[in-house]
Each structure stands twice: as structure tokens, then as C-alpha cells.
Image (tube, rainbow, N blue to C red; front, side, top):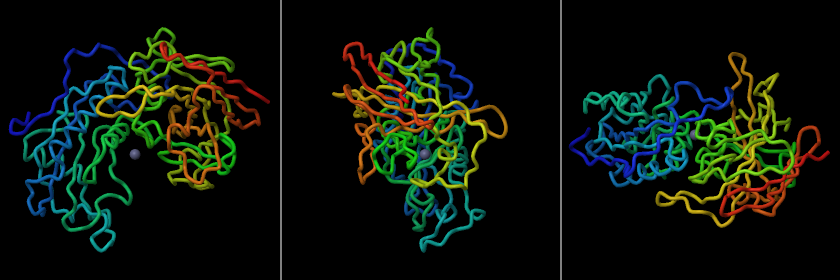
Length: 418
Ligand SMILES: [Zn+2]
């Protein structure tokens, strides 16, 4: 499509096994306008420069850098979807010139805020400029458009404070920094696909799992790129994508567990099949207002209205058996980890219930002064136990009984105790 530049395409030595997506339950489905989980996804890295750059033919995002990101994403999505979704191509655009940097700045070089009305939207301008300068409608040709910006030569800030990148809607995202890891792209594309941020919860005293004196931490899930992770999208995220089903006739599925002995396969295996995790339904006492606060570590007091009839809450169990993505691969990790997440369906004022933010539970509470963001701090290794407090005073006593490293089946005991 851009004969003048080197195109990096995904290597598909064998055609992907045609697998279709599973359909999640209504509340867990993503908005209809989001990319299908079995799409052959086309990604464009749209490199831009500012009209007032010293040399507007130059982007600070090199071909080599973007190719590395594209290759990591190709591996990542293939692994995440068990081959159901592919990156069929990624391309790196020639440098497209947008307006003067000052047109896009939120704050100028002196830190003075520029009123929203006076600012132009860099994504809109980049896509329009690509159409004009390259004669290509990226919105038609690609499923995901990642807009890459240069540093502002006028010295102001284009990004909102503390934001490295952000996604808008189902198709576009923008990257404000010089060099982002692949997982930042996996995060923004995750938003494009319909995922919210992955939260975690910590007991303030570090004594209990899901205590009533707790802090919710945005980005706190150490596994998924929707949190702090470079590993796997959570079981719930994969389920929402249709990469995991919910019927026992599906080749891989989640199910409702009865408390007691349960067993399931690690969900992050490339050959994951059969039951790969599931949930116990109950009242865990997490209020919806706790899950909608955007204030990291806030007390979540009062300013968010309580929902009168929150839907069923689920305590999800999954086992992760592999490490972070490095050089396009995820190696088996020496110790598998049992993870627990909470989800809740919310009945909004209008329309049907939908899935809301999911929360990773800190299964190894400790009076740490630092936040637990490491995977090992969130999960139980074989032989370890944890206690999850419920709203009515009951507890779920959780034990990771064992793990078979050949079949990758985990045995877990989840018992309700008064
Ligand atoms: Zn985000």
C-alpha cells in the first residue's frame, strides 16, 4: 500500500486454524461496535510530524521501533486468542504532517492551560492529513489506527497530565511519548476492543483479602496489560472477547462452580481446552461505587451514586502458567499461580445489565508499605491457601491443592465457611 516504504507484515507460514468466537452471556458482551474476536486485525502506525518541526519529514518513531512493536503485538494477540484473532498485517506510515504543535497543546510551555475550544484534535487531524497527503482512508483500510506524535517543538504538553497514551472509541489511539513498550499498545488496543482498566484491591492493614477497609487501585492487576502486566489478558477479558466459551460443548469454556473441590486447566496455555476456569456467584459486598471511581487509591466516598440493584457478583478463579511475553514468546513459569478476580454486573439507569470493572484480589495480604504489583504477590502457588472475606461474614477458604505440569490441570479447593 505504501510502495515507497518498507512494509512489515505478519508472517503466517501456515494459515491460521479457522476458529470462530464463542458468545459470552449478554452482560459480558462488549459493545456491538467493537472489533470481533476472530478478526484478522490490520494495524497502522500513523507517524506524524508538526508543521513547525525543524524537519517535518522526520518522525521520532523509527521503522525499527515500530516493527518491533508490531511483531510483539502479532505474537501477543495470537497467543491471547489461541489463534482465533490474528494480526493479518501491520504497516508503518510515511510521516504525515499535521498542524503547528501549539494547536494541539493542552498547556503551553509556561504551563498555562489552553482552553479546550481552542485546541485541535490530533487524531482527527492525523487521519485527515493521511487522506490528503497519502490518498488513503486509514479508517477503511485498517481496524486499529495508532497515531504517533513527535515532541511538541513549542514546548507545551499535548497529553493530559501523566498520560502516555490513550484510546478513543473502537479504532483509534494516540501515543504521546518517544518510545513505548508493546504492552502500552496492547493496553490501548484493549480499550479499542472494549476493555476497561483492570483494578486490584488491597486491605489497608494488609491482613485480609477483600476486607471492608480497603483501597481499590487502578491499573493494579499485575497480569493483564489493562493493568500493570505484560502477561495475559485476564480470564474475564478473554471470555468477553469470545476467546473462551461458557458451554461445556465449547472447546474451551468457563463455568459456574459449586463450592468444594474444583479443577480446571491453566487458561493461558496455547492448547487450553475444556474447562479453563470459572466462578462462584455470591455477594462479596463490593459496591459499584467502588468500581467506578477514577481516583487511584481514593476512599471512594460519596460522590458516585450507589446502584440500587447491582447484578450478581462473581468470584472468578483462573490459573496462569506462563511468564511475560519476551521476544514474541511466553515461557512456562516455574510456579503456576492461582488468581482470583471479582466482577459484577451493573443495571444502568437505561438498557440491559453490562459487565463492569473487574478486580484482581490480593490473595497474599501482608502489611507491606508498598503496593503489590508483582504477579507472585497476587496469586497462590500450589500448596498455598488464602481466605476471602464475604459481605455476610462468611469466608471462602481457598487452597491451590495441586497442579499437573503435563496436563496443566489445577486442583483447587474453595470452601465456604461461616
Ligand atoms: Zn487505559
